[in-house]
Length: 374
Image (tube, rainbow, N blue to C red):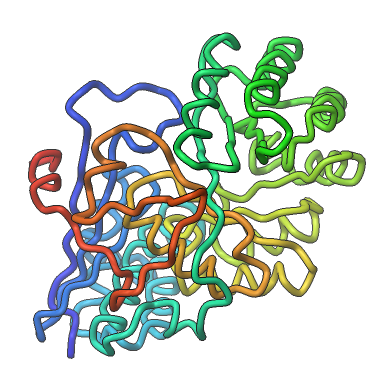
């Protein structure tokens, strides 16, 4: 079996894209085709147009080759070998960031092919699941006004969620407004709902972030996510070593090398790699095991379609330091809810790991054609 083509599918909502932390407004799906008719799918959590360029770029010079040209003709079952070849042969423009993001989607699709070829779900190919279902948390954006918090919380509690995360928006700009938001969230949820807060990297001052962490402790917040931009490792370390609550981050990091720095220099309590950015399923596993060596739990980031969510469920279930929580994007956008033929659902606050061969997810081609950028 050989890779015969790699297809990059750009999807975009009909409305104008807003400059907010909502990554369900567009999407980029990867299809890896084989000469035996088995097609694998993957998703990249990045800029669709940039990913398309990285995959389709022709050879420029040594170590400067588009990913598609590197992969064509290769045996799709040789996943680790292909990963290393993509990493090395695109190193002039890759190594971190968008280059690794694009590799993530291809790697994901290769695992899907391998599972379909062998008739096994990906979690079995990775060594077997410690968990058959994982507690889901409703992941949503902060509203503009604290008065809007209570109805949002009540809605997700009624749906069966036992954990909720609010993030981004204006959080991290005015301390008192932040406190009011969290206060309203805790008041509406009661004490039995797990509550998480994501600052979206808005803090620029360690002292202020520490003050906020102490405020969040009063409302029994489980973790305080991404208080600083990703390069601020010294600030992260200062905060993590003084914070009364857990500090979590990692969605903007790629490869084991960045995560090793995050763990050793950033001193965070929880890592949050995104399978669609970190380097795919293959690299996610390496990152998770580095964290395990340091007794750090892994709670993956996943804020896009069911393709990314399915991939994340497989890896979350098989790592010894995982299975704690699964992020569940509750955006109502069609690219979030309608891209899979059988959308992944939570039931009583838990999501079951896909059991069908490969990733266990199939694209709704009608949705693809409706939102595809021609």
